[in-house]
Image (cartoon, rainbow, N blue to C red; front, side, top):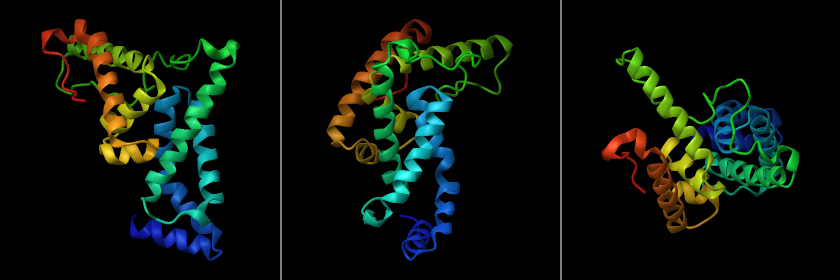
Length: 202
């Protein structure tokens, strides 16, 4: 855990609750991006990330520092995203929206996917954007656990052990989710990628 995180947490425990704002400022951007990537809806992601910070604050006295604060916070976010999706799936009126980007976004920005090439011409740029849109749609078709593992490891760059800690499971389980996720994405994107496939490894 970073020294600055440790200092802020110790100060909050001593009663200087204003220091918690340092942790919120430091992690609210990554927290929102993670929730947005898992839920595909900005309003839901904002609510979940805010709830996660409140839950983390309320539980700070039980935080022992065995993991980084960010890892602990992101596990709370992952759990809350899973809960939010379960609630959404029990509501027929909105169930059709699961896995779909917000209206008006045209799919762009739903997941943190960057297929742009600054040196590409207009035709290549369009092809890259179409590939990014196809990837976003394919990610939305994954199960929640597969999507979470893929988001954490391949799109946000966390090591397998960190992703496992955030998901509350074994590293081998994360590998299994990643294998299934990558196989699904390869199958869905193969027509666009040609025979070379993708560069992901599970």
